[in-house]
Image (cartoon, rainbow, N blue to C red; front, side, top):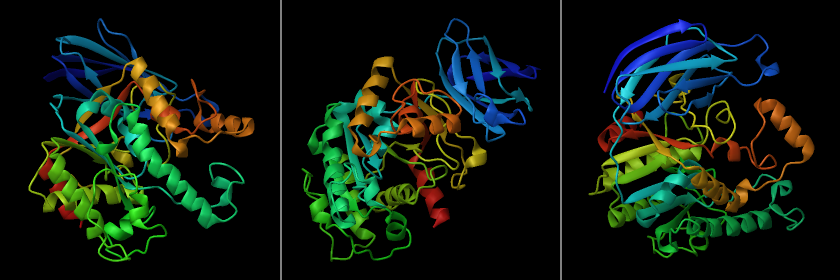
Length: 405
């Protein structure tokens, strides 16, 4: 898979010639108008011979942009073109072709909270539902105020509302994957306190949970090692995760990307996997990393477009010496609709916005939502024609975390 030539053909276009297919990776810098908030979000269109045009929405808040797209294997000696609208090229694109990783199951999805697995990989886990397992670390029970409870006025105290939220979300862990055929035996909740992942896993603090771990695990079909005392320590998270890896023996593990996802619980999930694998006799063939949070907000653009590829300039960490390979899982229109159903079944994503909030959200985002305008912004950010991951070998993943800690 060889790139023959890349050349800028104008301020808003570039061409490149390819030999054979793979995953196309394009990095370039853009310029936007002086008042970008008054303009629609800029876009880039990839023109492929014999294939439909592919439109990407660009991030107007950053100069560096990155696009990745899986090419058809029959793309041989192809002349391809990239055109921009609402922005200009300020550098000649740097292009690279990656071989497509050959992945297989069993698949294990590590989800920091209920809904993270669906946001990142609802399409992938539906495609491979027969041999996919999901491990959720936290019930996501944290609640800042009574105004944020799912049913207004239902509970009168914050403690009761948190208990109610935990009940809802522990049920989500089991019920939502059932829509894709993942049985309750293959969905497991460990019970890490919400918002305390980094303190527990990285800082090795002892945490006294507001809700007993055994209560959070009430729907589990797999019995996990019980905490050693009333206060949780790091090993109370690592031990059950290690045991699950030993039992499932996954060939591919999905986990949060520590270089791009700054959420403390998401960072903790990635570190917990590294610690569990260091204690395990089983090593997966590949690790797929995903980010549901990004520094600076949501990925740009409406639903239905290809998944956004974060540029290196927004990374929050530099762990891996060798760049992980981009990997796209393609979602058909019907699978995108099914993913919307998965997200809608997750209680934490079902907030309804008032018309005033909708207008304010539309102005801030810079585009008109294609559907679910009243729902959480994740309905636009996560339901795309592809799901994007970065693929890394287990040894490189472990070495990166070893250098960090």
